[in-house]
Length: 427
Image 1 (cartoon, rainbow, N blue to C red):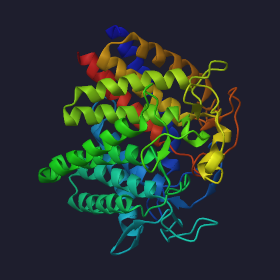
Image 2 (cartoon, rainbow, N blue to C red):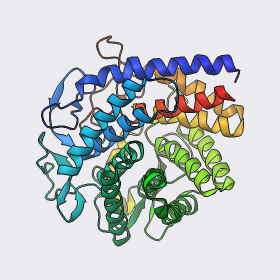
Image 3 (spheres, helix red, strand yellow):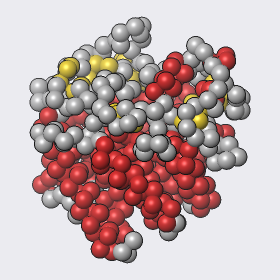
């Protein structure tokens, strides 16, 4: 890319972050009464339908605001950065006061009332319905600890991280909204743990360097698990494998999640940097190209929510997985989701910057065109992205994972893109 093209792209993404995304959320998301954030808006962003707080999103907001305060690109003033850190502290304080099931019970409640009172999800008889929620608390508090130098936030994140790892090793954890029986393993678990470990490592470098070696050991384990067990000979990540780490013929074992794959591969590039393993970066880039190949909707454009391992609609029998809730979500295989395209924008640009392979730049341009034609809300009072579209791009009102509107993926990827383009501009 020519430097003038990089500058132009930087300006576009800077505007998208400041004037399209953040302008919607600030001050809409702030709970000035109880702390933390509100985000149970409908997909359009026009109506706040509940003041409930999902721990999953609260942790993501903390990460988002702490990252904005830390952003390594000339976008925000010192006063703006200080304000972002104050906003992150609101969520930090709320989570540390309310998210645990008990003082010495290092599991997180999945859902809370506006004031932080734990609340059960309809149809569920326990409060700790998803270890993913715990993971997002760790990344939020770890990022805040790194940026603010907050020892208490680091200690909380570290203790919760150890609890997460212990529970996963025991097989004692829940994964709402995507539960899976113990006979199978989901790519999402080592995937998120690689990112969580990376975030905690960044905080440890600032506050507890002696912890870094153990975190790198764990990161290496999660990296190897993904690249050894979930990737087939065609560089396709199977979203579900058996407990014995084998592929299986039912539709649940023969589908891919292009968005998860593309997101995870920038996690793998991060891991490669920390572990000094060039072969991991090389493999990750190969996997990204394959994910674009099988995940792109050749008829209508955009990336599919799920695809078969050879592309297009997932194929196969339900077999022994007929009762698995994850099978039911495959009916939405052709939905077009906002977060998948946000991740694809960053990952394609990252892989291009690492390899110089023009195919990644071509994919970035293709995803760019589809994304900004499809997802931003055209209402000037809203502008933030619609979260889900039908296959042909028409809007639909449908819950994606949680009944919330969540700026995490967009904001994170815009921040990472701006930092990447700034490095490219500096040469």
